[in-house]
View 1 (cartoon, rainbow, N blue to C red):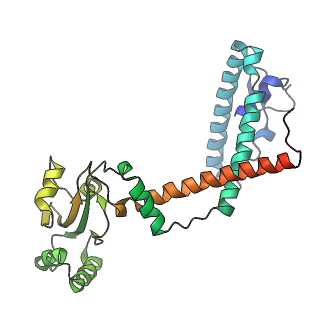
View 2 (cartoon, rainbow, N blue to C red):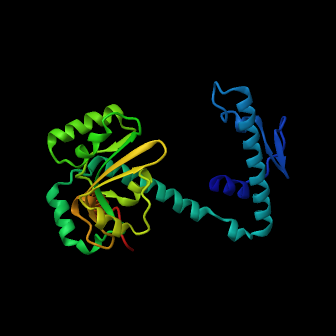
Amino acid sequence: MLLASCGLFNSKKKEPTGKAIARVFDVYLYPDDIKELVATGTKPADSVTIVKEFVRHWMEEQVLLHQAGNNLNQKQMDLTKQIEDYKNSLIIYAYEKELVKEKLDTNVNETEIEKYYDDNKKDFQLKNDIVKIIYVKVGKKSPGLDKLKALVISDNPKDRDKLSKYCYQYAQNFFLNDNAWLMFDDVLKEIPIQTYNQDLFLQNNNNHFVQIEDTASVYCLGIKGYMIKNSMSPLSFEKENIKKILLNKRKMDLIEEMKKNLYNDAQNHSDAQVY
């Protein structure tokens, strides 16, 4: 739109040639202007809707441009420098993107992650409560409900295997990875726990079994661990975030090194000089 607008401000208005589709003041829209608008195979009814919407948008834009042309002075309407700067930014961004795609090492090892965590612990404070849980949702008429509690609270690998098989056969929803930290707010979206104090609920139910029912389902929750907001976020919860931070830093360093090398090379070959 920016490029088209600039062209309209700086070019002569088109005289009508042939049969126009629409007109706004002295600017015309012709069939050639929309010949590639509708994809081959589009239903006729959909084609009409697409064209009508495009024409309406085009006319609104032309009215706005006409009004701007009547109220802005020539200096305000001269967008040449802004367009050139924007074009240059897009070209540079495209090149940097290809450079990063080709050169960036995306392997981040555990040592790097742990070092960053240790060096920046003050930045890793929990903004929400997090939990480790086992969670199973089943219908009220599901078989084996009397044994489900024992399987949920058990840490025995054989019981966990039994629980997994049970879930895949009968559960409406479940989560069995109690090594992963989850946002407690996300858990509450799945389980209808009624509590006005999350911290107190977690403190009272840590390493406990919680069972809740509604009209159709039974929710079995084993709370295996928790951490309260404003405490230090555990490394395992921050690993992916730290990896993104480290990769972004590598990307910035790679781009800066590229810029520096290109500039130095241009200077060494007298392709960049200050007069």
